[in-house]
Amino acid sequence: MKDFRNNGQAVYLMPGMAADPTIFEYLEFPDEFEVHWLSWKLPDKNESIQEYAARMCVEVHHPAPILIGVSFGGVIVQEMSKIINTGKVIIISSIKTHHELPPRMKFARDTGIYKYLPTGSLDYIYQIDRLPVGNFIKKRLQLYKTYLSVNDKEYLDWSIKNLVCWQQEAPPEGLVHIHGDLDLVFPIKYIKDPIVLKGGTHIMILNRFRWFNEHLIDLLRTSPKKTYKTTP
Image (cartoon, rainbow, N blue to C red; front, side, top):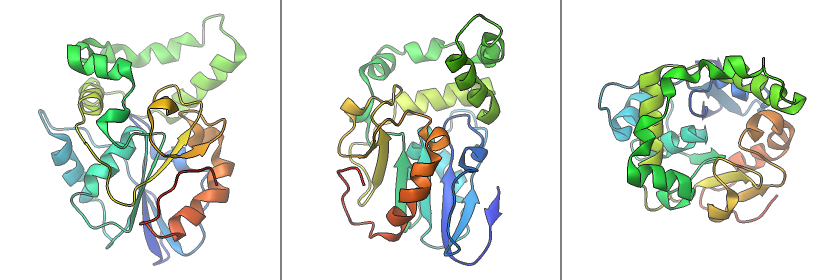
């Protein structure tokens, strides 16, 4: 876990599914914040998402920290906030409840088809760029190769199951949700009342980091009781 120690307000950053915390390397925080990167742990066999979140809480060493999570990391920090007191919870490119899952994920949950995904062969990402595909796809694949760090089948199976089968009915009070209007993983039409980043995709924490450096600090400083519904 990387940190920038200055005895300020503690901020813990949780990356997306299988991602390395270096996805946050371009974010800039003023000295009033003490920033810590969280990394994925391999799950224990049959471990619940609540039990996993409790293990992640062991890595938090400050009272009332701010938790920021991306994608499935956003789900994990919400579960962590049910265990420890937090100053604020911010999720990016994520979901607040199971109602915001897109229909294809609900179908996977209801049919159990998620159990049969070929998670043991994810090295295909390292082979696709040898194919005659466009430069845009190759650049996107390079991002994935750079920042994906967990390629363990049991972890991936566990993560997919706990994402599509997550049963949260209502978000934590004061939750801040930032979402791109071009997110293909969690389409915005299923997301209720987020802060909308126009042109933002599911990986906007990487390719729109300048927006976050301009706006995220204001969100960290504002009251967690505020409700956000519009683009800053």
